[in-house]
Image (cartoon, rainbow, N blue to C red; front, side):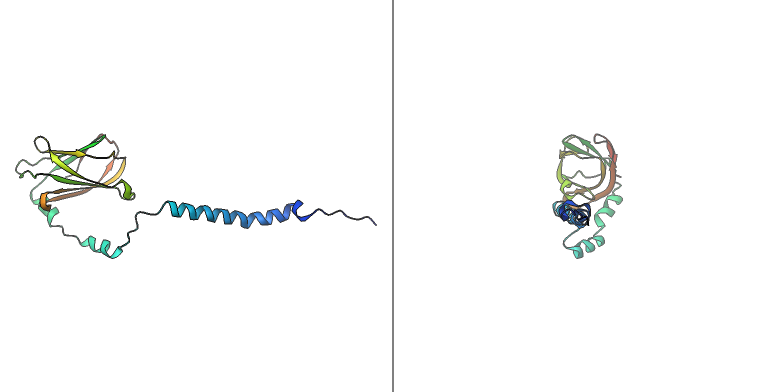
Amino acid sequence: MKEQKTLAWYKQFWPWFLIALPGSVVIASVITIILAVQNADTIVVDDYYKAGLAINRDLSSEIRANELNIKSSIQFHPDQASIIIENTQLTRPQQLQLKLIHPTLAEKDQSIVLLPTDGLRYSGKIKPVSTGTWDIIIIADANSWRIQRRIKVDDIHGRYRLR
C-alpha cells in the first residue's frame, strides 16, 4: 500500500483562510476604536439639559433689532471681518461682538470684538474663514440688540447680507 504524504497544517490553505476571517475583524475593530478616540464628535454637549433650555432663550434683543430696523452685512477678508450697519438713526455702539459658529466643528468657532472704523462700519481681526455654513451672531454693547443668522459662505472674500 502506498502512503499518502500530508502537509503540515500551517502549509495548507484552509487553516489560514479560517484564521484570516476573524483576524481581519479584529484588525478592523482596532482601527475603528482608534478612529473613534482620535476624532471625537464635537456636536455632542456634556450638559444636554442646559443646551435644551437654551432653545427657550430670551429673544428680546433680537426683537429690539427688528424694532430698530437694523440692516447689516458682513464681509470677510483674509484676516479681518467687517460689519456694516445700515441704519443712520441708530445710536452707534462702542463695539460689537461677532460670533462665528461652525455648525459641526467647534474648533473653528470664533468670538471677536469689532471696533468702529468709519461711518457705521466695524472691523476686527479673525482667523481665516472656510467656505460652508456658518452661524453669525452680532451683539451690540450691553446686549441692547442682537442679530443672528445662518449664512452659506461660498466666497471667503464676499459680502453677505445678514438682515
